[in-house]
Image (cartoon, rainbow, N blue to C red):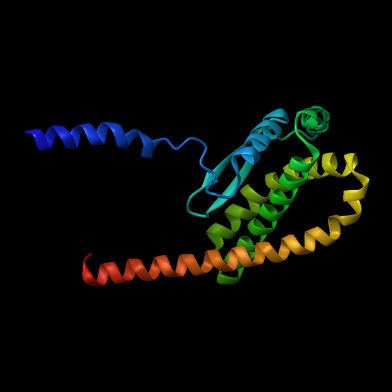
Length: 188
């Protein structure tokens, strides 16, 4: 009886923590970057989430009107005054890297002919992420001319980092699949 009671108490305490993760975005964004993402995305009518199967952070919107997009860009430019320029630059680079990672994963699915995942990223994840990135890029580059000259060089370095990230992610996926096969074989 005590064992059952202790198990029930453990389930009551631990179970809700696993069901409703609060805005889990993997370990890609830091706490400060999450706050910037939440504030900027909310200010222009976007939202964000995390796809566990793809291991990707995604940004989306429910508005499809182009006239509405110009109006939301004005709201976005008023927001980052609360955020330091250095934090905004760091966040900008992180979002650029996320765009590159998403594009690289999409290309990988195209090469592997996994059309379901390719179409999902191509049609639903990447367009909104790129649109959000354009808003962010306009804001960052308009405010700092010195950084504007360094952007091309930084983008090359960030693209290389994204390629390493995707390569490492592929290795982790292969290891997981090998572990699953081993467990099935030995009924573990």
